[in-house]
Amino acid sequence: MDGEDYLHPEGPQLDSAPYRQPASPDMHSMVEDQMYPCSSWGDPQQSAYTHYSMQSTNQQYNSNAVSIARSETYNASLFHDASEPTGLGFSRNIDFPQDFCIDDLSNTSLFSSPPDSLSEYADTQSFLNSDSLAHVPTIWDVSTPAQQSQHEPNPSRFQGLSTLEEIAAILHTPPLGGYQIPSTHQRHTEEEEDADEEEAEELGHADTYAEYRPSKSTIGISHPDIVVETNTLSSVPPPDVTYTLAIPETIINRGLLSALQLEAIIYACQQHQVILQKGQRAGFLIGDGAGVGKGRTVAGVILENYLKGRRKALWFSVSNDLKYDAERDLRDIEAPDIPVHALNKIKYGDTTTSEGVLFATYSALIGESQAGGQHRTRLKQILDWCRPGFDGVIVFDECHKAKNATSTKMGKAVLDLQNKLPLARVVYASATGASEPKNMIYMSRLGIWGEGTPFRTFDEFLHAIEKR
Image 1 (cartoon, helix red, strand yellow):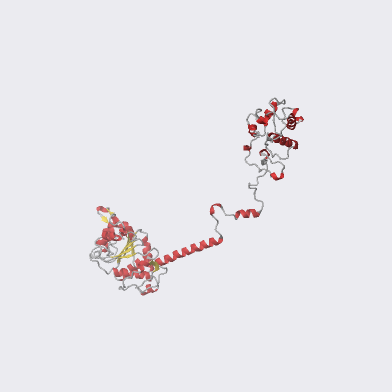
Image 2 (tube, rainbow, N blue to C red; image 1 turned 60 degrees about the vertical axis):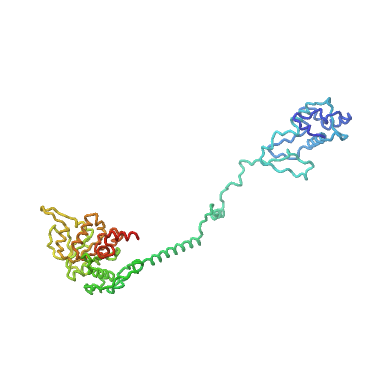
């Protein structure tokens, strides 16, 4: 049988093969009784065939047995082969409610799309097992899951913590991103590594610096504090000691001057015995760091020369108040008989003071006065007090203050004083005197540049130092 005619959009066609004149009127009556029971003729608008439309709720397969039987009878009759003896056929002039059959097949036929489309349901359950049923279900027998109530709790949502075990489990859960809090063992390991690095750094500092002890001078008591120097400098041997101190043994044995300070006094006085080629006496730089006691070392140099008969000395510093520190240093080494005179307390032109230490500031070197119509300067007053041929000590304490010797009046005055007193025993004292080579120009007595040295001028010396 060709069943495509029942898929026609306008319903079954009466002129097709299934509706040809039946072979026997009795067969027509039998088929008609099977297809249209008596109960269906009472209401021509009511379909005698059960339609399985989709519903929003799950539709169970156990439908009415009568409806299933009617559907099976209808299906078996329609799809029966016309060549068989019981083939189905209708006359074009058949006398039954024709509009009922055609409308019913065209509007509510099993082959038309149900009102509820399967596309409305994203998830559908699988078909029922056909082994447990007498009839294989159709696509309309598919059941859909009931939608979850909005008031029912969602098991995937966080419901809170109810026990301490759950809280502990969350606290021990590794955080996202791969980072984990280091354990106690890891922290101890890191601390040990840091300690090893610090120890290595300390050892590095220990290797960089070495404790300083006088190697050629053998007199005096060790310095009360530890003094260090760089390994590079410690590899350079100091010159041999050729000078003999005049400082009393009592001062040395009592430790008023330490071995380190006595060594500096010895080398300063030994260097002062050298006369440079240009006729100036060589000077000496005390570059000890802060706290070593440069003031007492300077006082020891003044005492040594005072005992040798050089009773006058000049002491320049940055402040007039440091005069009291100078007096204290001389007193500490049992040299209180050496007087200290403050230049700012002396009138211009007064040169009556005979001996002792004339204490002045660097700014006093450029001081001048017009009192009485006479032009007087502090520099001329100092030179008059020293007298020609002065061979006493000139101390430039905190000498880095004279670093601009070529560009300022103060620096020029420092150079002028050294040039006009060529035989003076100059001592430079500063912890930062050589921090910048270009600022060493005022140290003209060191004998590093000039006639008879490897560098004819200071510029040549500076160029050689800066290019290294």
